[in-house]
Length: 111
Length: 392
Image 1 (cartoon, rainbow over the protein chains, first blue to last red):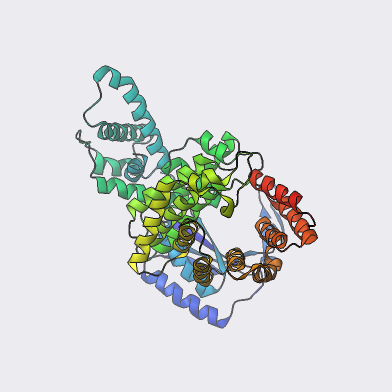
Image 2 (spheres, rainbow over the protein chains, first blue to last red):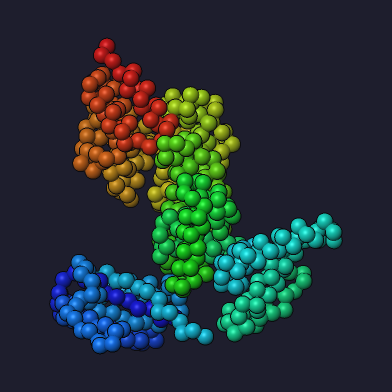
């Protein structure tokens, strides 16, 4: 199954060069093990825009949609057979990026 | 049986329902057809069929169903599982119920329900919540196991020690809640919880006989529980260890606990936390009085593994018995910044102050301890002690 892994951060643009090297090495390991689906860093939440297209006219407004002390600074989507494998992998990911992570299962496609 | 079915079908709900249905069928048919030669195997076979039926009904395209038919489609009537496989399933069930991805309260509830076989109302009563609340807690935990992909598997040898520590924490929490019930309006010792914790630990010890900390946990529980009937007076008051009637202790349980501790000592492997706690309790229950020098030596070892303030408090109390009350009090006082909100800290301090004849500070410490304590028998004991402290 697939898991979304959010990188928890409370500071803006806080990544360091050492962390990037460690993250690259970790990503190569994910790819070699067949666990890699996708990963990316995200711009600061203050750069976000909220979209509401539910009415007649779409409304665009300055984000973020909820003010928090912590947010996702980036994410992985990984493939793992079960939670224990995913947790073990991402314990290394947490060490590599030097941040806490939040892991959530991606819902399976309805059959 | 639930463990075996859960393993087969990868779904706790299906396993539980199928087991219940099989029992219902047995109640209906055995009085008519007679009891089958191997009732356990009959129940497992019947439950397996019920589970397959249910999955067929629910979804013919379901992957679980395909897998089950592939592997178990032909259900053998002789039906007996080799014992090893059943034990394995039970172990897997324990690890899944105590998985670190679940909230602690969910682990406790799930372990009592799935491994212990307690009913939802029984567990709800044990933790003083509504049946519906406990039911929802268990349902949520099961939903997380399924949705998050928690595997039905014994952890690898590499991960086993850490995961086992998590399982032991759940068992010890169940035991402690029974042994020193934290709510003021419950019985001071709740045997339904201590008994269940011991039963589960014994089972885990049988499944993992070489796991030293499991042996230590079982010994620890047996040695503490052996003193149960001497620990609360007929007036419902806590009796401290030194004042207990040793004749009331359960000699068989103490003997079993001592044998387990000795077996760990004989292994020559450095003891973990629970083994050290068991050894300390073995010293407390050996002979006519506690050998405090041995207790201090064991606490010295324990502090190296777990330097938490509560361990240091217990060491300080033991030092007070070995080296004199002043020495103990000095060590206890050092812990004030960390333990000011903990009733046992103030109770220990009050006891030392009382015995040193410092009347007014002793009374103050008793007052603080009473204000922070939750257990009815402990409050009764502390109150009597406080009221007995008078200037001589």
